[in-house]
Each structure stands twice: as C-alpha cells, then as structure tokens.
Image (cartoon, rainbow over all chains, first blue to last red):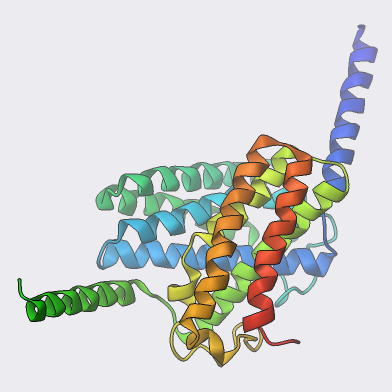
Length: 157
Length: 157
C-alpha cells in the first residue's frame, strides 16, 4: 500500500470504529448526565466506605466490595459513553458541573483519565490482600487521581 | 458449654457482629437514599447498554463492562448498608419509592435478593464468553430478578 492508501485505510478504520462505538452509545443528553452523576455518587459512597474502614474498624470484605465497585465504574468507559457531544450543558439529577474543556482538551483528559483507571484497578488489587496499611496508602493515591480531574474539569458548586 | 452458655455466646457473637457491621455503615438517611438511587440508575444504564448490544450490533467489551458493573453493585451489600432503619421515608435525588415492607418482610426480601445477586454474577460470567445468544437469555433472567423486587417492594411512580 502506498502512503495515500494507508491513510485512507486508517481513516476508514477510524470511521468504522467510531461508527460502531457510537451505535452502542445510549441515552439522551439528560439521561447521560443523570447516569454519570449516578455513577460518580456510587463511587463517592464506595470511597466513603473505604475511608470509614481505614479510619475505623477494618473489614476486609467491605473494602473489597467498595473497591471492586469503584474499579467496575472506572472500567465502564464513561468517557465515550456518557460524555458525548452536547452534554457539556444540561440537567440530570441536577445541572452538570462539567467544564466545556473536557470536550475539547483531549490531551488533558487523557492525563487525568489514565491515572484514575490505573489507581482504581490497583485499589481493587490492594483491597483483595486485606492489608489495611496498603489500602490506606492506595486510597490516598486514588483520591489524588479523582481530584486531578475534579480540579481541572469540574466546576465548583 | 451448657445450653445457657451456648445461647449467651451466640447472643454475644451476634451483638459483636451487629456492632461491627453497623460501625461500617456510613451516611445519613438522605445520603443512603441518594446513594441507592444512584446505584440503581447506574445499573439501569448498564442494563440499557446490554439491551442495546443484544438488540443491535454486539460488542463483547461493552457487554463485559456493563455486566461487571452490575455484578459489582449486586455484590456491594446495598441491603444492610443503604436500607437502614428509618430510610423507608425520605428524599435522596427524589422521594424514595421503597415500600415499608422491605424493612419488615425479611423472608420476602431474601426471596428476591438471592436470585438478583445470583443472576447478576451469572450475567458477568456469560458476558465474558462473548456468546450473544447466551447473553440475551441471561439478560432476560436478570431482568426478571430485578422485576421480582420492583413488583414487591417498590411503589409505582
């Protein structure tokens, strides 16, 4: 294949992939905003549970339940599925707090999304060991990863 | 141990277990109601994604993402953690639709909670195979398990 053909093929693959991905995306803007707000609040509950365990009586099973749920949300590809074009404004349970930059600054999004998914999966691994001190340390790293996105792409209330 | 001692020991174990469990439960009533509404809506999103895949173009990874998230929620022990006494009334994102019977009919709750957790975990297993027909069948079973609880313990809107 010459260079032009390769570029065309790459472009076609991208179009097909994009087409396939968009065919699976469900929900109107208000649905997507409500679902993403729901997912973040389910994570907030789970983070709160881990915090209560590392600061109080440690219960291995509870931390595993919470960490697995956080990891499952982190791996659910909320980005392409619940932050589609046009959802920078709108109301789910409440008005979205997302900044418009999330939809334009792809490099910046990648810099915060990657660490978040990585630390969430690591949290699940560490939770499985039942090592309270390691869980406490990983909880801090995960919290920092969450904050990385909040600071950059979420409006203050 | 004589019978009285055994009963006392059993009672003590129960008290300790109950004490430990309650120490890990977090959130005020309105927090718990908001978190459980969030978790159910995160499941609704995930069920919608599986539905879109079995009815449209099947994407194995998307179904796995959604099924794993549903399973993680099902395994998170929402019952004892987000349906504590007094949360039969109250407002999270909106007024709770739970019926008071959920807090009194323990046998009935067990009859619907068990199948829901079982079918959710089975859904994750079937999703991992990528067998679209099997996923479709399991999706039906999981939907029935969800409905079993809605019919019995959720008020109509």
